[in-house]
Length: 353
Image 1: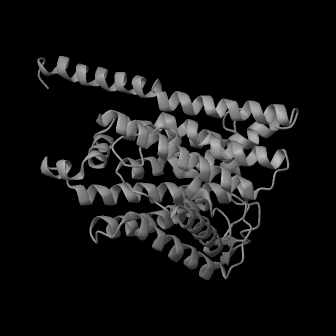
Image 2: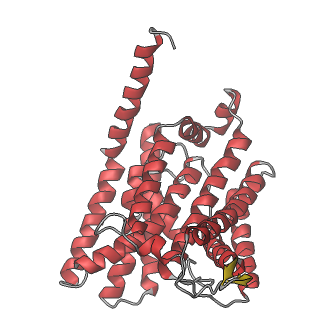
Image 3: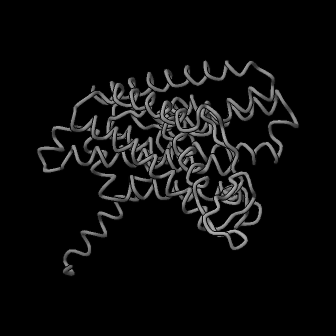
């Protein structure tokens, strides 16, 4: 690079950081943060000594950690004007693939080669962890690749495509496990051990994924291309972007995030949940929309997603503590999602005037 190019590159980097600061101070992000604080104050008043305890907040942060990993991937999908309803199948298949990988590992035990490990045993080593992680990521990769090909190349609407893979993925998980969950303690240290005193690995992993999401969306060419496609797909194609290939990459990224979340879920809860995670897609999409990412694509903020991801979790946790019927949590999250989309539409109309 010549010396004459250096000031220009420095200017680009400065503009990038200024854009990040503007997004962090933007009205949707601040409004979302205010709403989150109001919810936490409300539940603290309604359940003093229960909601705002250190143990409950730590447990809440651990639950939010898994949803944060999912929402980082979902942010990229929505930023490209896509949607992913197959999130539950990606998570559950990630759990099932990881558990099956552990179940089929053969190791030498007491001098007898080829003996399969007991997945319920608390025997952990790096080989078990890597095998389970690879299997979970493979599950997410397959779901994401299928979504991307169907949406980008077959031109099936994203909602229909991912709804189809949602059902198919859940069906495959049920077939593999015969509808029965399996316990596995081999991965427990991944989530519940402490590399940093006072902070569980699960929370630390979520922070790392979030930082990677910030870099990928706001500080990389991949993120700029994603936002460009979400803003105007035809214009992006005319300036030379390979839109179809990039959309496949975006859905693969989302799928990998879901598969990794399944791996973390198995490590944290120590069991698969073939009947669980059914509302994780609603929670993730709500979190992303609340954070200021437009469901119409082209506008996204990872910082807002980090704030928005807490709202469904706080609602669920707070309702349980104050003994509200847990079914109301689904109603509340759905209402918040509709409100977020309505506010986004109002903002877009104001920009067009």
